[in-house]
Amino acid sequence: MKRPDDDPQTYLDSIDDPGLRATIEAVRALVREVAPEVVEGIRYGMLDYPGLANLAAQKRYVALYVDPAIVAPRAHLLPGADLGKSCIRLTPGRPLPQDGIREVLRARWARDR
Image (cartoon, rainbow, N blue to C red; front, side, top):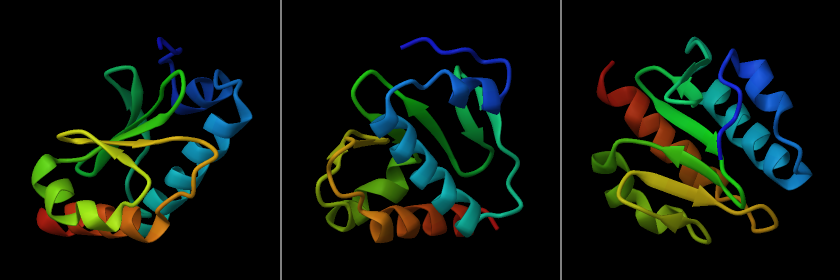
């Protein structure tokens, strides 16, 4: 789904679905917890956290894009999430695997530090 890519706030303001908005806000909070110094931007039409991840609100889910080498060995920590090679798809209304997402983000952030 194409969203405005002027800046992060414009992107977020374009998310009308309350479930998608709550899910993306919950993941953003985890990003800020793990890497408070990362600067949120827009890249490839989605929220960008350089050196960490990308985050996108799709039509029916939120997609968190992280290096596949980080996601694969931690797949067991992400119950309820639909996993692609480098994509963690999070569906509103399902429990958010916060501890697993936190661990994925920590591992990715630590790798290049």
